[in-house]
Amino acid sequence: MIDTLYIEQAIATHPRVREIGLRFPSANQVMCERYGAVFNRKSQNFRLQKKNPSLILADKFDNHVLETPEGYGIGGRNNYYFAHMLNCIYDCRYCFLQGMYRSAHYVLFVNYDEFFSAMDAKLMAHDGEDVWFFSGYDCDSLALDPLTGFAEHLLSYLETRPHAMVELRTKSTQIRALLGQAPLSNVIVAFSLTPEPAAVALEHKAPSVAKRINAMTQLAQNGWRLGLRFDPLLDDVRFEEHYQSLFRDIFDRIDPACIHSITIGPFRMPGSFFSNVVRLYPDEPLLAGSFANRDGLITYPKEREAAMLAFCLDELRVHVSGDKIFSCAVDGRDTVRADTESINLGFRSSSH
Amino acid sequence: MFLVVALQAEAQPLITHFGLRCESPMGMFRIYRSESMALVVSGVGKSLSAAATGYLCGCSDGWRNAPWINIGIAGHRNVDVGELIVANKIVDQSTAHSWYPPQLVSNVVNSTLITVDKPEESYPERAAYDMEAAGFFPSATRCSTGELVQSIKVISDNPHQSIASLNARSIEQLITKNLSEIEQFINRLSELSIEIKVLPHNGSLPESWAKRWSFSVTQGHRLRRLLQRWKVLIGDGETLDSVLGACKDGAAVLTALEARLNAEKPTYRRSLLVGPRASSLPDVQSQ
Ligand code: SF4
Image (tube, rainbow over all chains, first blue to last red):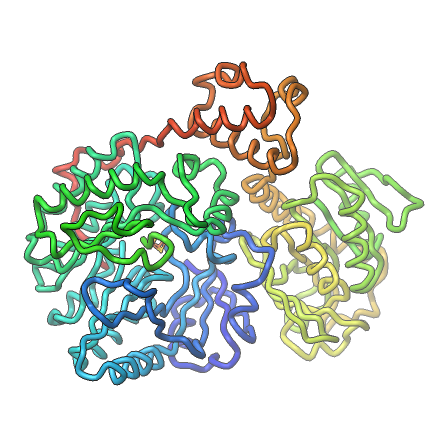
């Protein structure tokens, strides 16, 4: 439920704004000049706002599509990311967004077509080559889709651009737009997963792991290619048992042939974001655990991180061939095994 | 809880209702207090409101991340006299600068609130008009987070009922009529503020320990966090004494605490609600 809708004055008559306004007839509509005047203001508390976030409807002027950090990707050469939304309806305690943004309000950029034009420009720049676009870095790609309808627009755009490869990153079960049409070979629906006990403790408001696996099963049955994202890996006294059990739950239901790629990323967060999150949740056990500061990045201690990665790689290779597995670690090769693809840590935060 | 009110007539019903006592009749501004609340009477206008907010902060403890509320009367083009509104947008008419107090409490009608330098009698916009909020809000958000800084106004005049008909008695009556809603609003903000209460510098270090070792400011910050971690990961399961007994100075305390805490890991247990692993895969709910 949205109680307050902030709307940039300049897009007040945009059809998508009107449509969304009608979905919340009793919400207070507040006009603003630019979304930043609401979203980026100092003196805001993410934790309090998360109790009742507002929706901000905005126009994105520039930087619709950005280059990923060098080396980041799942096998492709040309890698970009984009976010049609900022923030997320779920509330994962390890989420870097709560350390990065001052506000927990959702921002929806309604000018979808400009995202697609920017993607076209990248396709032109890499004429004839596959170009990867990662969605869902600053939000969950599908969670608010029943409201935004973004996936449907994106899929219809992608139908005629076979070189545009898109990863939709999600914890959501909002897959109606996907199930409603024939699968596209240039779309990977990548689900973020943690063992169920950690998910229950930390991924507030997100669908259970079981529901996510069920959604993956349906997508696989309908021919969609899947990604598995174990990022962040979360330590726990029964780490091995919990991850073993998670992998078993997944591969009991999902045919490995439907898996396009798997990525594993240890917990990592820039120090300043981490401090912000600790300030918001000083009593959170996850954040009270043992961490190291490696060049400004908060991670598990190096040896522990390497052991966690090695364990998961071994376990996953029981189910899936190594060339589908991509792993990343802060120190690169010295903690990533040589028999799987190593990717740059890339985004300096483990990303849902 | 801190209240900033322009007029004595607006303040009086609050002073009586909350049992506040006048603290400094000779000060720059008049302050009234109880154990849990302080109220300042600012006078009319945004500059006085900003100054009184700063003054109240300077004269008080516990102001960080506490609720700060500006309460008073306002005119409105479309709202009936006697209704209570909360500002979801504050506009300083003279500078066109706007602020957006985040709204987390839903028992009060929302409105834009325009702060004017002279009383507004033609109500050109669908908004409330006052003379203080644009001074109060930026000042109070230096003390507290925006969610807890709010302007609530009882509508006192509109195109059908002129501002000229107001007097001290009618203003008191307008506020009195809304005391219960105002109190509900205040209580809800208080509950929210508890959740983000700022902890004291030395965390929960027992007094005897604080006397035994001294800590620099930086060490104090580290200590506070280590004690928070202790509470979360170890709690009463072990005494601090068992770890710190042999420490000679503050630095040794920090090292010993850190080493002990780093040996702990969180434990996530399989949820009882979810039931056994293999049989709990529900149907997908794709809305
Ligand atoms: S980690 Fe992902 S799913 Fe969780 S709150 Fe953040 S963006 Fe949403």
